[in-house]
Amino acid sequence: MTGSTPQQRFDGKCAVVTGVGRAGQVGEVVAKEFAARGAAVAIIDRDGASAELLAAAMRTEGLAVTAYGCDLTDAAATTETFAKIAAANGGHIDALANVAGGFAMSGPVAESDPSVFQRQLAINLGSAYGATRACIPFMRASGGGIVFMAAAAILPGGKLAGMAGYAASKAGVTALMRAVAQEERTNGIRANALAPTAIRTGVNLDSMGDKFAYVERESVAGVIAFLCSGEAVNITGQVIELA
Image (cartoon, rainbow, N blue to C red; front, top):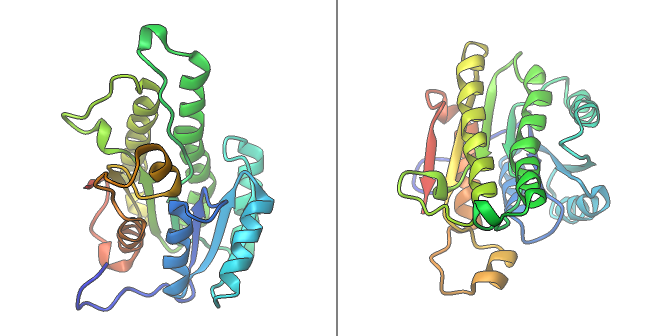
């Protein structure tokens, strides 16, 4: 977060960021934000080799970042990956940013491609569920924050036509967040979701041009870090719109 208040540090804490495989993605900036504040950061991507290249580049900047390759919809592989991350960080994980996902138009429901619909559910909702399920046991001992990525489109008044798959997946992510917030509050675990409009990424610039009112990646990263910090100890179960 910007302003005169000192930024909350994450020294001695472990933060996991999913969906970080290439430069220019949202997850890249989120990982750098946590690492710059002192966290030991683990990034996860389906393409482990690409994630390692990105982590290596961050380490040259003096940031403590390690990479893991994992399909987050594979329950066994995801459980194993989070166990490895926790083992490398004193048995605990303190923050999880569920950034993995993607967008695709599925078309009008009556003419939609079922494979696109199912793919959206898998990469958005399935990945968030898998990572969260595997992470929670390592977060209960000391508490922490989990942030999910919803979307402004699913908020009241949002335009959903032609994107039922994406919208359904993000609505599911929001329900998942609220369930975690209710279930884990007594364990000191908070869960919240961001609902941004389009974020300024290379992919979005290529598809929509540079005249759109984008949300900057740095703004997303700052809010995620805030929600996972001690400053947000009383914030849980909330959907925060970014526009």
